[in-house]
Length: 433
Image 1 (cartoon, rainbow, N blue to C red):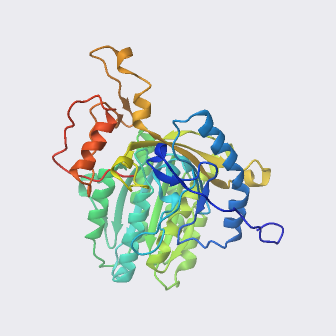
Image 2: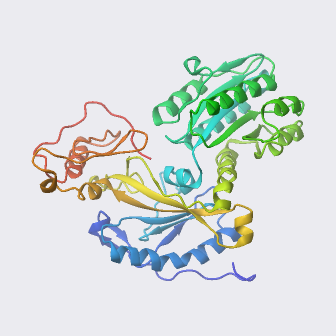
Image 3: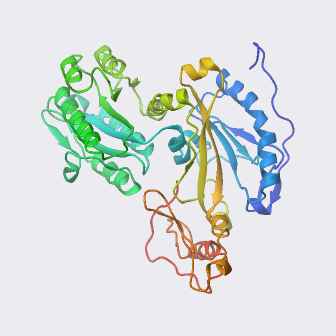
């Protein structure tokens, strides 16, 4: 949509099988765009973004010509569209929809925000029974899905008293790795609503934890935030904020008003606006995903204003986007960086345009340290900054819902054919992004 007129995009899109891309039908001359079903694809921001991002076609193509080992290159927009090179035919799932949203992917979230300490503060008073509690639990799950190994988190519930959903984590924050996130999700699922909600007790406990963590040099040592999930607040709680967060407002407070009733919306909104946060109203389960993502845009503002183009590398994960055949099951890492506008007005408002990234098969990284250079007893491996193995000659991924033959082919591929036998795992787990 340009100057009040719609602009026709694209032409005939030819796809050919390409061995470098696991024999998938692709177009190595052009990229194409995918828009998730939860995003209105006739939004002018989507259409304009699709138009100006067409210039990436030449950049993607030149990158691939200069480095034939490159695989997927892409740009994920903050508005929701996803431009992928080489172009492919996107296939709907069993429900007939394409639910992939680039903004939910680990590479996007890590590149779009800095490390953060998060307290999720949940109202479990009696008024939260039924659908409200269901929506609140889904909101927590969505927030947890936006966290990674560089983040720290805890979940505090309140009614008449303050409760830690995991008593072992009382008074502290834990690394938001996959195990801890899944553990929290299970515990939240068992919560029940009862009693009277006393918000100030939960806020005081949350501020205490975050302040102590920062003073002792623990956690992310970067952003700090409280996610307040409630169906209403009866006052503004000025005294709490004056004592624990004002005037510096170092802890942002994001508020999520649950349910169709908006009786106490003004108080909930006041809490967020006066603590450098963001207020959202979530009335149905369908509203959860889009509203939760708003906090990432707020946390990205300082980075955009300062134009910090930090490059991130994700942890190892299975290439779960195009699992159409056994040979496509590669262990990958993604290198990504945020994309900002150079316009002064955009920079002043801290608007993130999106994230650009590229997938890197781990076997390509291992090729940089060939066996003949390491010696007969030498080998190379890579660790992330959090101590997780990124690449290792004997790394064996554990994946659900795939046949043993697929696993055997994958394990052999990781070791580049140098192992005479491939050891199969005796347990299974999920290891996708």
